[in-house]
Image (cartoon, rainbow, N blue to C red; front, side, top):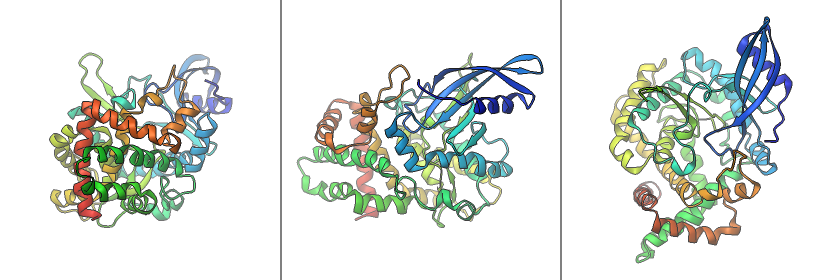
Amino acid sequence: MSVQLYAGDMIAAVKAIHGPKSTLRDFTVINGSEAAQEYLSCVVRVKAVCDVEGEEKIANFVVKMKPLLDMQRTIVEGMKVFDQEVAFYTKLLPLMKRNMPGLKIVECYFAHSEGVIVMEDLAQQGYRNLTTSLSEYREQNGDAQARMVMRELAKFHAASQGFDWLNLLPGCFEKDMRLEIEGSDAFQNMIGGSLRNSIVPIMQHMYKDDLLYIKKYTDWIANLEDEVWPFLVKSWKANPRYINAVCNGDFWANNIMFLFDPKTRALRDLRLIDFQMMRYSHVYFDLQHFFYVSTKASFREQHMQSLLRTYLDAFLAFNNVSPDLKTFDQFMDGFNETKLSAILIGLAMCPIAVAFIDEMVQIDNAGPSEDQVSKLLGNEENAEVKWAKSVKAFEEDELFRREIKVMVADLITDMDRQIF
């Protein structure tokens, strides 16, 4: 990998790990992320040899930087995702830890405005992601893991209570980084391209004998600029009717790392990672993103309500400044009132994970190519190909078809309630 690591950053990392008297002898890049295709960052693992008062010691850490490809760098700088994550580690997290010491978040040794974030190497400690690629993300549905996730997410949300974040850090939260800032077209191209060029034709194929029935739904979905984006912007804003909190903003399976006992395989611990999409919103934003992007329909039907109860019980137990929250039924009312936006994103991610995964495969840990990034972003040049490929996947992939059918049914029910 043609990465450029700066000696000053490596020295600072060693001193953060082994103390101010440590000196750097040498360092080696081990490899990048073992789990996720890196589209918004370049992640490398570093092994540094250092001297601590005459004793040789090793420091292992991860360096997260802006991506190498010009196209990716343009996206990252336009969306300001590194500014967001640096602000999280340097400004928000210290305040949240005053409320809630012991948050299960990857430790950040230091981060600075040039877009460099140095963190502990969780993989070296035995932590791992449950998924190795987008194509597997819906197969990882362990109930024990999910309960621990709910408790730690509740603790994270509770730690952000009691602060006026919109006034404390207006630059982080005043505009939606996915939809309202100048550089947000990358997200819109990816999600919009999937909705328009995959979900719409699949829905038309599902209801090919009754196209008139499905027309108002597909017309609304295809009208991204006038209907879908304004709806999502409104849906994702903090709302005084609900519990609001600092949210991870991209809370899915691959942004959680788990530690299992090497002998019994029992789950021992987890860490939350990746805060590039951090936002201030209602807590349903993270919860719904987790359920509708990271779990199968059968898992949601069997476990979602009990897991939401686990979340709420933990939130109330951890919370230092209790909101006016009365019953679980009221909490569920809010969840159901706001889930249409999550269904839309979950639907959009399905074709990306199934029908187009071959376009995003990272080879020999080299990261995606310019062409792969362009395809992921849903450029209109291959729209007809995506229509055909999506319908083909719906016909041939049983799991994909089952997931799409359930979410389309949920989509229609919620659109009738909220849109029509």
